[in-house]
Each structure stands twice: as C-alpha cells, then as structure tokens.
Amino acid sequence: MSIYVTKGEKKNEYHAINEQKQVVGKGWIFPSVPSDIFGYPRLNVFIEMKVEQCDDQLAIKDLLFATLLEKAKEIRSENREKKVRVYHCCFSHDQEAIKYYSEKSGFQHDEGMYIIRKVMSDTPPQVTDTPEVNYEALPLSSEEDIVQLINAHQTVFRSGYSVEGIKELQEKFGWKSIAAIHNGEIVGNIMLWVNEENPNHPFGWVEDLFVTKDVRHKGIGKNLVAQALAHFRDLHVPEIRIEVWSANERAMNLYKQFGFSFYEETESSIGMFL
Image (cartoon, rainbow, N blue to C red; front, side, top):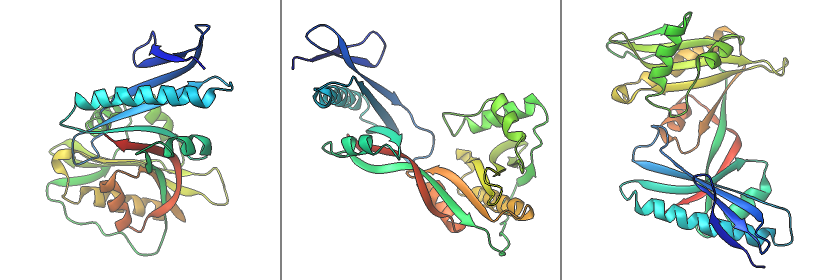
C-alpha cells in the first residue's frame, strides 16, 4: 500500500491519496468552543473520517486518524489556557465506530448524550423563594417575544433555536414555556411538551432548560424544574424524560435531586483530553 495524506481543498479537510492519485478517504477536524456548561475554559475538537471500501480500508483509516490527531495536538499547543478534548461522536448503536475509537491509545468512551427519566409521584414539587425573580408562562405570541427568548438562550448555548423551530414546538400537545424574570429580563427558561408517539405511554419531554450565568446558584433552575413537574402532573403524565449531555454535571446533579435516573444513551462520545 502506498498511501499519503494531504490537505484537502476545503478548510479542516484532509485526503488520503493512493498511487493512482485517487482520493480513497477523507478526514475532517473541527475545533469549537462548547456551550456554557463547564466550570472551566474548554475547546472541543471533533474528528470524522470516511474511507472507501477496499482491502486497505483499516490502514487508510489509521493513517487519517494519525494525521487528525497530530492536527489536534497543534490546536492544543495554540490553546494552552483551555482544556482541549479531541473526540469522535456517533450514534450509540454504531458499535463498529465505538469499537474503533475506543481502541485508540488514550481514547475513552467517557461522555455521551443521555436520556434520563423520572416516574411521576404524588409528592408535590417544592418551589423555594428567589428574591426579585418571578416565574411566569411565556405565551410567545409574537416573533418579537420569541426572539427575546432565543437571545437569552444563546447566552448559554452555542446552538440554539430559530423562530420557526419554536413555532413548531408550540403546536405540540402540552407545550409550555416557563420563564424566570429578573428586572424585566429573561434569566432562565424551561420548555415542555408531551410526546404522544406511543398513545398507550405518553411522557413529558423537557425540551430545554437554561439559567444565565449571572444568576446561577440561587435556586432558579430548581424552581423551573419544580414548575415543570407541576405542569406535567396537571396533565396526568406518568413519566418525564429529558436529553442531557453526561458531562454537563451541573444539569445532571440538578435532575438527580428530583429523582431522574439514566434511561439510555443516544450518542456516544469517545475521545481524550490532550
């Protein structure tokens, strides 16, 4: 096998070239600043590869991987003030990809997208007093109101919602948006709806929860979850689920306080800190 890797035409793209000057594999590397869910400066470096079916497929893949890992280390050297994690993320049923990356030196399957759930009980939720913060349902009846929520959400999460996306959510059964308001501004919000795909077992879905950085550690997130439980209890929903990144320890600890527990992993992240 005579294969070499060269820079592709697109940014962050690398090509594996054979003796006939044909592209037999491609690799991509994408550094990105994560959402505001960690207590330290962090940089995520995502890698992806696609290799043509051939006898040398694994060897080509290994060559691309080595190239991408070296590029990730270069990115690390340029961002020494941050914790840099190089990783590949795939659906949890893709056992081939999970096995390949998990066998790479230093790589661990230590993060993922979890669905956690809580079976409803008769115990009423406890709402604590948070001075100067009011909680109210947002009808989001105008695009201006929706944009205001989106702007607040984007101070926490890098990838957010569109006006059209929220309008689609509003059409779902049981939809409700509950906001924490401080000095007339949205400082937190929780969006809810009911999943009725299985009519014999509907469940409440927490679409999103955020609290802005300047008002954290005041019990606002806890109160928003309590309000969500009350909403679903009024709808007689037997179970609640939410999708949350396992490394988001702040969110995971919050939900555990209310009795949420692991249900399944939908995406698996395999990588290492450099």
